Image 1 (cartoon, one colour):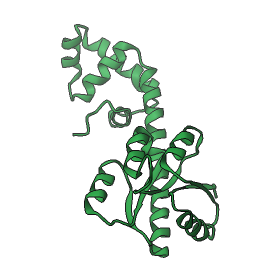
Image 2: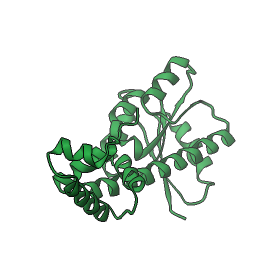
Image 3: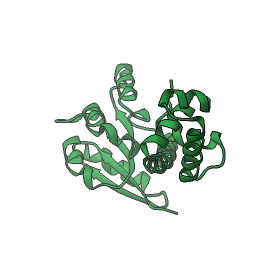
Image 4: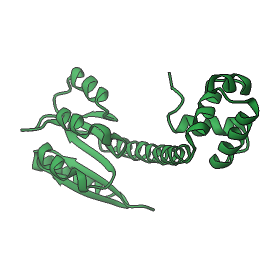
Length: 206
C-alpha cells in the first residue's frame, strides 16, 4: 500500500502531539506538523499530496487564509478545518474555500480517523480524474486544427453535412477528418470521442 501523508497545521503544541499520537497508530502514514499556516505555506511547493488537518484560529495566516492560498492545489491536498470555536459561519466559509470537512476540537478519535480516510479517498479520486483529464487533453492536442473543428461540430451535435457547410468543405472531406480524429483519439465510436472531449473540458458541464 502507498504511504500517505498527513500535515498537521496548528499553533498549539499539545494539539499537534495528541493528533500525532492518534494518527501514528494507522498503517502507512507519514505525519508532518507545522506551528503555523505561514510555516506550512512556505514549504507547500515541496510537499507530496496529502490530508491537511488545519486549525482555524492561528496567529498569522489562519485556516481560511491557508485555504485561499492553496487555491488550485485543492486536488492535491484534502483540507480538514479544526476549530474550538464551532462557528457555523466559519464552517460555511471553509467549505466554500474547498475544505472537505469541519471538526470541533477536541475531536472524537473515531470520527477524526473516518474523516481522514474520506479525505484520502477524495484525493485519490481527484488524482485519477486529473490523470484522465491530462490524457484526454493530450489526445485532443494531437489533432490538427481542422480535425478539432470537426470534433467541435460533432460535440455540438451537428451532422456531417452541417459541419461541412460551416467549414466550407465537402461532406466527404468531413468524413476523412472524422476518421482521422477517431484514429488519433484511439476510439471506434462517436460516443467514445465525445467522452474524451468531455474529459478534456471541451463540453460545458452546465
